[in-house]
Amino acid sequence: MEHLDLELNAENLSYKGLTSREVEVLKWSAEGKTAAEVAMILDLKSRTVNFHIGSAIRKIGVNNKTSAVVQAALQGLF
View (tube, rainbow, N blue to C red):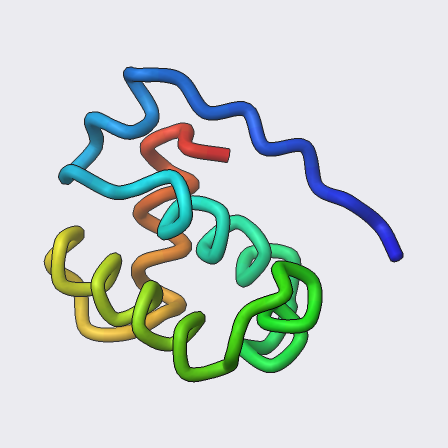
């Protein structure tokens, strides 16, 4: 299974107060992974992945996961 390099620095995490886990989940989502696939990759429950996605959506101020991923990418988080 491929592994995505997760390069997080203070500048990345300062964007909207996202946690490293929220950014990591968005990054995997940007790679086209479903919540279930991200859960398997990160050894989490799907519910936990969805919690992080929901939290990121609220913090970024968008309406869905796709918009959150796009905004995070546009801000250079990954």
